[in-house]
Length: 176
Image 1 (cartoon, rainbow, N blue to C red):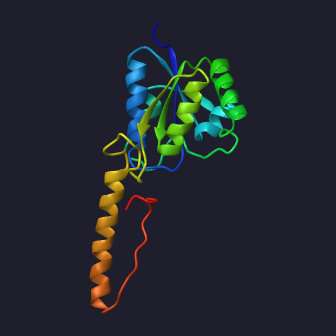
Image 2: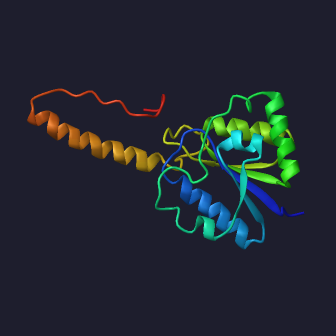
Image 3: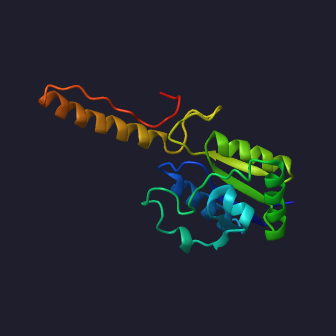
């Protein structure tokens, strides 16, 4: 039995390329005859039924924009057994048969829990941290790394010009 309606969400921190992933999911599902619901603000939006019907037009010009058109958030409420069940119940209420989750390790744990509550999930690793196990590169890592390298190169030139020392902190948790 094939699915007729799926949801797609982005969760946790945003990463470059998330919009391209959202677009690819939506276009592939729509051209396969599925309905696609975009879920605003990750699991928080799923808990509250904050969804909209996606069509080819809604994703036509998003790949050139940073961030995520679906917005993103973290949800303390979702990270409880009651929250996961509420999200699964909302999926049933909305007719969502499966969810595509784009995010990092925390988002994947949320997908695991939702799958345990009976809603199948597919995960796309999207994080600048590049810390999702069993994934060589995540959506967003290459852009984040190359942007940081470019900025450090520029800063080095200025630092040397002033005979100074600079300290640079970059995002990435414990992955650097």
